[in-house]
Image 1 (tube, rainbow, N blue to C red):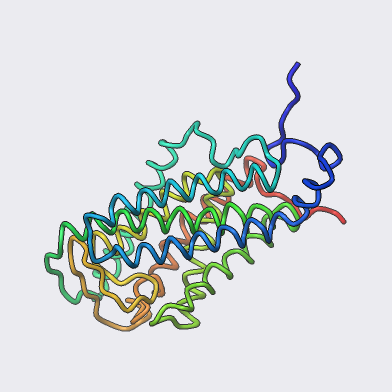
Image 2: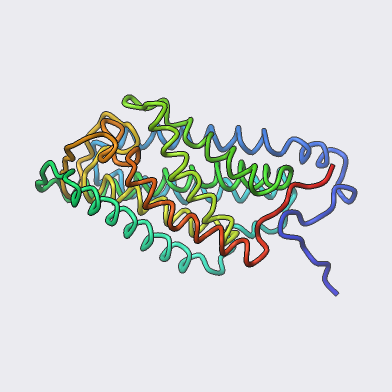
Length: 293
């Protein structure tokens, strides 16, 4: 009879050699630091190839695949896991597809509400080549941010502090990382933590898979920049997407210089799927309590 494998670890600490037991004890800083360096490298390479869309598409997709491979390998070596269930091949394409459809629909719904309330500034054609290049860039960014914030930070913190604390902490840190952007504001960082950070963590909680939040994250960012050509998360660069869209009106409606992610509309639109994800997780017993000390 084969020995069963738990979702989070293939062997108990007592079964591991001493050196590997010590390594696993420091799995969080090792995984987080390693993947953070990989993410910085991905961002740097994306920036270099961004002016050449024909390179940005294949290189971005290649970096996304490399990010998945790095996370899987690090999880197996550092955490001593034979399986990495959050990246299981089963359900990969369906999870990505559902995430992409939801992300595209949510961003379009948010933009339509903003325009309906007078946030329309104008729209013109952009660049199809830029559209393709941004697809590659956003694929690599979505993968690296998801494996770092949901695959490492949220997952490991949840084991130690429970789902609620992990969701709050990971969301706030996700928002805080966007403070480095040129047009970042404290409110913009908090808003993206409450919208993107919480929604994506809830999506992971409800599915226990990274494929769905990766698809959701990619589609939200790509629709934002690649389709409508709106600056993302406080960036000072206007994306050369398929369209070039400008918003006008009060910042509570449009998000101001940070972009629509800092608008009240984004908070309200993202609140709906976040609530549904958490309800589903609660019904299926996927909300984990804080472990007793």
